[in-house]
Image 1 (spheres, rainbow, N blue to C red):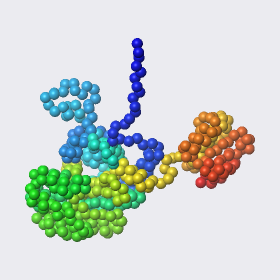
Image 2: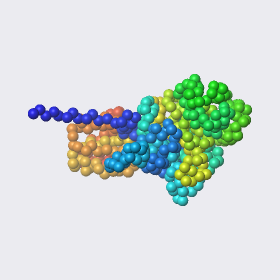
Image 3: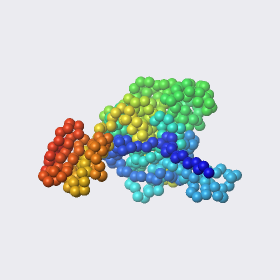
Image 4: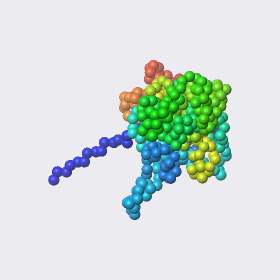
Length: 455
């Protein structure tokens, strides 16, 4: 009998996901640390929510296109046992889903913990989210978001604070960005002035794609959604307005005069841009009347951040939402927030070479292993250096010195100590700078001198 050996399965990960080694993880932690430091500076406290939420929490919050991208989790056990196959199966066999973003779980959190929080409530959250999207450059199925939100106030000062955070975060990371701003009330007004107030969702979804597919394709999509040519013609001048923010606002006031909701949006935008000017924001802020952002829960200001020096989609976005907590039984609690797309920020920084050197926790000094007695001798030296926050490593095996040298070279460790019997007898340690070749001997107890040499 011939026994066929089963071929080993080639290891792989799902498309749209990524592994990160120690160097990449250190770089990502640099982003997370920078972002969270700025968040805390403005009084935001960190929370976390589960990776999975009940589908009833998630469905209907992101629009039809968003709902299609939700990852549904099959119930444990025999999910199909007792299922009624004459009825839609999804609600019967899938009761939970992976979170699509951090905003809806945050709204659920606020309602569930309303007696434990103080309003206005300011929180930030840095966790992964999942979307069943088609993987492509800059678009992943699993990615991290860094969200900062405030609920319990309708003041435009909350929007200003988010603009200030955007300004500080990206300048701290060294990324030049443009912050695009619009208002969903203005988009509602557009639907009203073109005679199709019932088509506001179709209009916002279509014009949100203008950067990707162009004005002509947006026109065709709007016609396909039931808008007549005259209505589309009334939208086009708005989507192609140019000039300063003040000039655009002035032009919109004449176009939007017949829409009360649209005028409210313009008032809010004018107030916000006034605050931005007074606050001395250095980041470019642009009124972009084609900006819609597809998520259906936004009701006021909307934001989108674009990198200026690297070709990629938006690296951040958010907006004002007045009704989200009402879905969970707590009406009248307005909130506003913005999300920093950590994975795209990482790609931008990697592409532009913006990460500082030395983020990978590479040891500064490697003690070669010369044997058991020698290892015991250098243990107090290693401990003294570590107490001064120096990253020190002791090679675990008494291997050939050539192998230990090669290890230090591959790891990029700049200093190597070879301390043997003669050094033990003299009460010293020997340390070599592998780049310059300089080698010096130190008293085993003189940690200060060793530290100076390692600088």
